Image 1 (cartoon, rainbow, N blue to C red):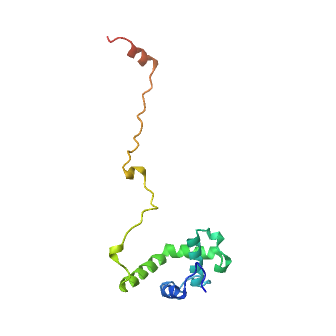
Image 2 (image 1 turned 180 degrees about the vertical axis):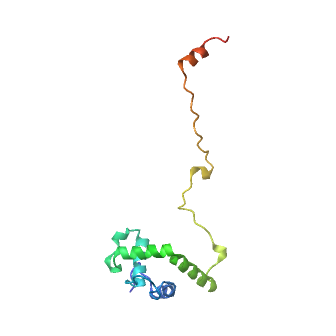
Image 3 (image 1 turned 30 degrees about the vertical axis):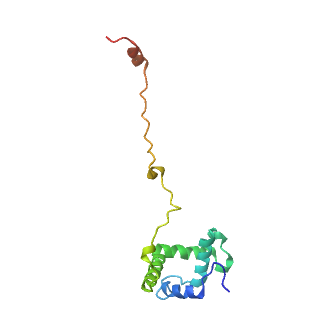
Length: 140
C-alpha cells in the first residue's frame, strides 16, 4: 500500500534513470535515497506545508530541502521534465490540439484590463504674497 503523497513503483521506475547518481559525483555522496527524498519533496509541495514541518519518515527537512534546491539550481528538474515530455510525445501521449494555459491564478495590474492609468497630479505653484497682490491689482 502506498502513502497518499508517495510515488508509486511505476512512477519512480520512470524517474530513477533521469536522476543524478553518486557515480562521478564530487563531494559528499547522497546519503538519503532519491525515492525517500522525492516523496518528501512531493509531500511538501502537495500539502503546502513549510519545509520544517516535513515528517521525519522522509529524513531531515534540511537535507530534503537542500537537494530540492540544488537540483533546481543545477537544472535537474528542467531536464527531468523535458525527458518526460519527450517520452510522452514519442508514445503519442501529448495531444497538441488540447494545449492551453490556465491563467486563473495570474494576477494582472488593473491597467492590463483596460482601466485608466493613474496620472501624476500636477503640483500647484505656491502663491507668494507679492504675486497675490499683483494678481489682485487691476491691469496696468
